[in-house]
Image (cartoon, rainbow, N blue to C red; front, side, top):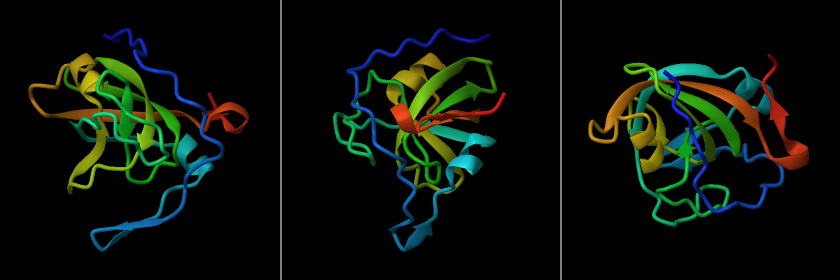
Length: 146
């Protein structure tokens, strides 16, 4: 069953370009994939949830708990992806605008709103499928080939 996902958030200005610069955190180096790799991205793994509480994400957008956003270590930012909870089939489209999760074995962090929509907020973790739909905003936006 696919859940209807409405974006309850303050409109964010489009990010110009893509954030794909390598970065180091806690002594580990992360190299984001390029746009073409990201547009083919379709992975299964463990999702967790977090709250940014109005803090800016990796591309400077303020992230709030009621928004549908997510964090990924190596996808170019920003991008849009469909996240599906494999246990119950619920699915939601999110904007990936932050980096994380930085806990071994986790694929993606989602906002509290997404965790509620996918019905895993109380469990804390869920096995999910993450499929990129598009990368970038405005003139920079590139969509997945059908």
